[in-house]
Image 1: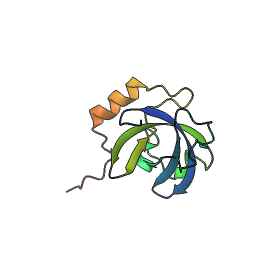
Image 2 (image 1 turned 135 degrees about the vertical axis):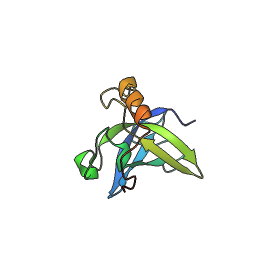
Image 3 (image 1 turned 90 degrees about the vertical axis):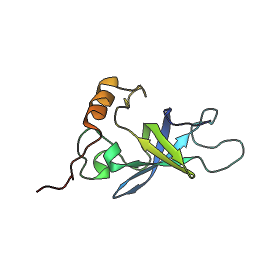
Image 4 (image 1 turned 30 degrees about the vertical axis):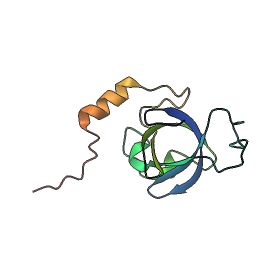
Length: 116
């Protein structure tokens, strides 16, 4: 069962200006999301701000449709799954504690706080 905090594999299924939708590959599936009961795999959104520790101009600068990715499950609420790639090593799915610590210290601030 999926839960917040898990790191899972997935495949980018759709790209929008604000992020990428990822079909999650559940344990026990054949890796092609063809599980036994033929239901649609869980799908979550990686918002553009959760794709890299730096500012991303375009989603396609980071991912492409069909690309395999490791994602962390940030939140699951009302049937929606929020995913993140920041701090998740795309080679092995391990969490990069240094990047996660830096983001916590910054408070995930991406600017945009009004000026005077």
